[in-house]
Length: 112
Image (cartoon, rainbow, N blue to C red; front, top):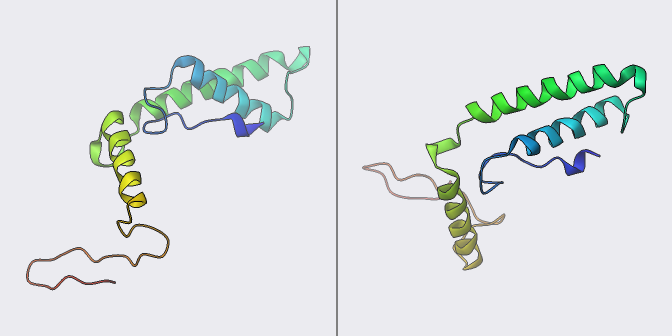
């Protein structure tokens, strides 16, 4: 059930998540946690209230998250695409590459 919950922030989405995206994710979460695809009549109110509360919490979370480095969604997507292209071109990025130590003035570059 939760496999259909998608990442709702850039750069995973090219644009901001819509209210429908956020509500769908909240509904999937409540379904998974409760174990019910649809609640019985006597549980409908509490089920819907949980979906509403999780929708609101998710919207607040997404509104206040900052993408590291302050990049916009399009800049992050562009940077990600560039990094993928570079990795494919043999830029030394991958699981077997050794991490490179950042250059500090007055020191020689090296591999950690």
